[in-house]
Length: 374
Image (cartoon, rainbow, N blue to C red; front, side):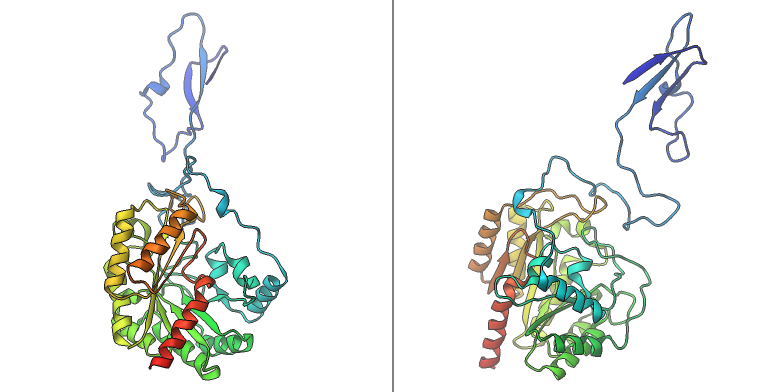
């Protein structure tokens, strides 16, 4: 705080507090009461603590809903050393980036700012470069508070040639395992399941041995849309519940829901014999151990095969605040716990994501075993 004296009309006002319709202050409030002094007048200048700025009101906010009680940075929660990643680089990374750009394929790796992009595109320890291809455009109709993908109520219509073009591109790429995902498309009657199914069929036609995992939306709970996709020839049906039951309305768009996601995963398992199902949960959003155990029990009750657990990382201050950075040791505990209660595979680590490459070789083995036993 600072003060100064001069010969002037009495005035008392705070800096950084403009008087406007968004911050009305009564002229009769204490802020406008001059100090009682005889013989001279003073201007008192007060420096008040700044609060985070809200998005401008004369245009759309940069994130649905703007700043709120669950967003912003928490200065008391520091990012630990085990989350610091080198900037993606390397010959294979540049080659994959150029190839994807040339084929005009969207990847969730880039759109969702995945921290593993360097490892996946460079091939990790086995030299197999992988990417997760995003169908149905790069604009989502939902506004989940954790996600960096751009949103719109009316995104561009799907490209009718995308299924065939994607299949040709992937077949020419030479990979043995591919993950297809998409933004939510609530604007489409079937949520985009038909588009998904056409892409899988086209890929299997061009390369019958390729293994296809589809990481899907909940299709608004439309189980007919789920059936369309699970009978298209895919090998793994994945849909993420994202967080524990209590935090669903805080973390996800209101059109999503815990029970709705469970019903989608359950139907995928029951509707197609031998279908491998998979889901993912982010940690560090304020969930408790008991809540996570409850979610894992609910997933096992509907026979979900594969679970991935990873650290939630805040894309921008307008997204959900990180409540905790879970240690690698705790992630190791959850892997052991998950597999002890019946999951066939749990990928658990601070940088693990739902389409993380570490589980792909294991999933390939599961698919081959299923084929031999069929």
